[in-house]
Length: 346
Figure 1: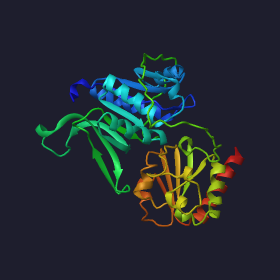
Figure 2: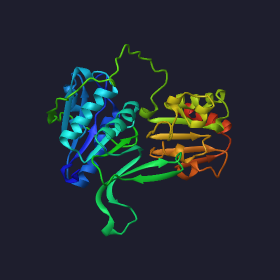
Figure 3: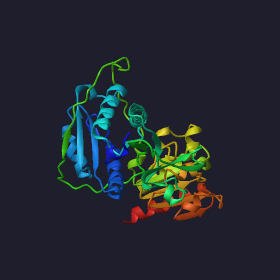
Figure 4: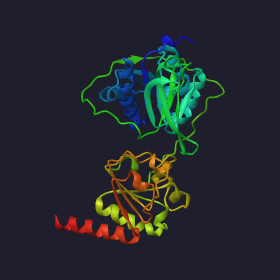
């Protein structure tokens, strides 16, 4: 493998039912940052059927080029045709870096493709930057301009920085909500490159017999501007009524920690943290949450963090902008009443 042949930062632009996922724009945002450090450009790769009209959206969010792979076999996600198409793009265009969202699709597709193109992949990254590797080696023993991929390891108890210095592309899956999308430039037009994938049916192909779409019964906490999040300290599923009332009064959405999900008090869709979702609201209430590193990894980028906990030594206070030490059963209703009174006075 001649590493010098590989140039550019590529991102997988995931779309489902002709709608681009938010992580597609987030990857372009991070991709632009990495590309600037390397003096190169960002190319988004769009797979599907009749999806060429989505390319301009990717250009609005910063993609310099968009490779469109349009084929009826790619209408709905299936591992084998998508993997063949994406591996074909990588072999043809030879990107130095390829980023994939760590969605249900991305976590299946990314490792499959990395194996096909004989490179490594770092999963569930929370930070990406260009630097030298190995980190602590003398400068003359370091390889320059490597993609340094950082992710929590050992259940979130430590942070690992990983590189792939001897193979290309350098591949990573990135958790949705971690990277920041750029402000869109309305009216931008994509530089489209159409690529015809050589898709060959084999025994790995599956046939989709039916698609059943379930109506979501829970809010998307990743889109919420205000989150009222509860942990084990709330005490019970019934006691979450206090948080529901606060969220309603302040115009927020209820979320929770892993302990709450494990206890069956709230559904998995509302979980914030390393094994849940990464959120970035304007205001994050951490109520009865101790602040384990796994939870903090999912919410530490919130603009304002307000912690309520009876334990003054709880780690959550280390990241909180405002902290209240006391009984949440007294504090939360008082806070809700004060907000209701303020609303009524307007």
